[in-house]
Image 1 (tube, helix red, strand yellow):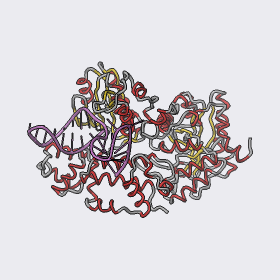
Image 2 (cartoon, protein in one colour):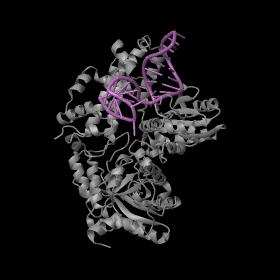
Image 3 (cartoon, rainbow, N blue to C red):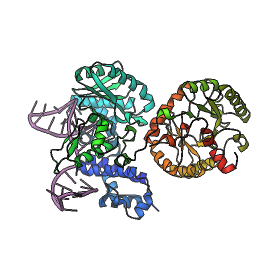
Image 4 (cartoon, chains in turn orange, purple):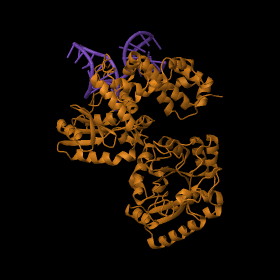
Length: 589
DNA sequence: GCCGTTTTCGGCCCGACTGTTTTCAGTCG
C-alpha cells in the first residue's frame, strides 16, 4: 500500500526544484526535476501499478536517481533527501518567489546578507534603505520590490478568463485599427483559452514599432508602465492585470505568434523537432542551426503559423491544444480531432428563470435563445432543497412544465423549450424529488449545492448513487469549484467518469466563467470512456447565454469534437439523446 | 539529473529588458 499519491509526488518534486534553485544548483539538474513533474502530470495511467512494476524509469525524463527517490517517497511517505534540503532554508522564504522581479539569486542574497525571510521584513528593509545598499542591488531595485509587494497585496495576480476578455478584446481591436499595424493578436495563455490567466500578451506585426508602443503605454486603460523598450513594453492595466506588448516585423510574426502563444512545454517540443532537422526555432524565425552536427534539411518559407507546423511535419495545432498533452504526436500522425466550434451548438440545458434565482423570465429566456439562433433551450430551475435560491416545490415545478408545454404550442417547429430541473443531490445521494415527479420532465440535471465537506469516498459514493437514477440525464458542475475563490470538493473524478459511462449519464461542461467544471484536463478521459458532454451556460440572466463562448474554449481544450457534445444535435435528434438513459433502464418509449 | 542514429561525457531553448555595472548578472517568458 502506497503512502503517497501521484499528486503528492508532483508536489514533492516541485518543492525540491525550488529548493535547488535557492541553493544555486546546476540549472539543468533543476530542470530535470521540473521535466519529471511534467511527465507525471501528463501520465494518465495507473501510477500505483507503474511503481509496483518498477517501470517509472521507462518514462521520458525520469532516470534511475529520480525513480529511486519517487519510489522511496511513495512507499514510506518521507524522503530524507528532501527533509535535509528543506531544513537548510526558512519556510517563509518561499513567499518571496511570488514577487515580480525576485528570483532565486536575489532571494538568496537578501537572506544571507540581510537575514530577510519574510515579505514583511523585506518591505521594511527596502524602506530603510538596507536593500539598496546591497551589492548587486540599488535604489531602483528596492523601489521595484516595494512596487511588487504592493501589487501582490492588491492583486492576487490571477484572473478568470471571462473577467478579462472584454477589456482584452477592446484593446486588441484598437491596436488592430492603428495605421501601420499589419497583424495583431493576443498570444499566451489567453489565446490558449486557459480558464485562469496571469497576463495578456499582445503581439503586433508592424514597420512602425515606436508608434505602436507609444499608443500602448499611454492608453487610457493603463495604470502604470512597467517597461518601455524598443520591441517590448509592459504595463499594468487598471483592471489589475499585467499586459505585455511585443512588436515584430511581418516576417517574424508567424514565429513570434507561435512562440508567445506557448505553452512553454509545447514550444520546447517544437524546438526539439527543429533541432532534429538541423534548424533552430526562436521567436523570430526558423533558421539554420549554427551548432548542428547533422546536414540540415532545406528550410521552407514560413508565412503563417500553419507553414511552421508543416515545416516540422505536423498538422496545424489549434492554440487550445498547445499544452504538451499529446498534441504533437497526434499532429505528426494526422490524428488531431476536428475541434468543436461555437456555430455547432444548437441549444443548451442548464438555465434558470425568475421562478428560482434567475433574473430573466421564462419568456425572456426563450426569446433570447431564439435571437441567438438556438433551436432549443432547456429550463432547469433549482429544486426544493435549494431554499436560498427559491427552489421549486413540486406544485410550482409542475406549473412550469404546463407553461412550457403551452409556449411550445406557440413556437411552431423551429424552436422548442425543454422542461427540466436542476435537482439537488442530497447528502446521502438521494434526489430532491420522487421519481414519479422526475418522470414528468424532459430531462434532469443533478447537482451538489450543500454538504461540500464530505470525505472523498463519501462524496464520490453520493454522486455515483445520484447518477445511477435513470431519470438523471446529466451531472451538473461536477466538482463545485469556483475559480479563484472556492476549491473543488474532494472527489474521485475518474470513478465518476467511469460511473457516468456505465450508466449513460451525460457530464456537464458548465460554461459559467467562474466554474468551467468539469475541468478541461479530464475531458479526454471522459471522451475515451464514451461519456458525452453537454455544454451549458448555467444562465441566470439572458446575457449569460453568452457564456457558451467560454464553454466552447474549454471544450476545445478538452479535445472535444461536435460529435462529443450532445447539444450540437438538432431538434428532431436531441429528444432521443435526452431519453436514451430512461429507455435503457425503464423500458419506456 | 537526464540522455544518446557520430557522445557514457558533455550537452541540455534562448532572446529581451532592467539595473547595476563598465561588460554583465538576474529575471522573465
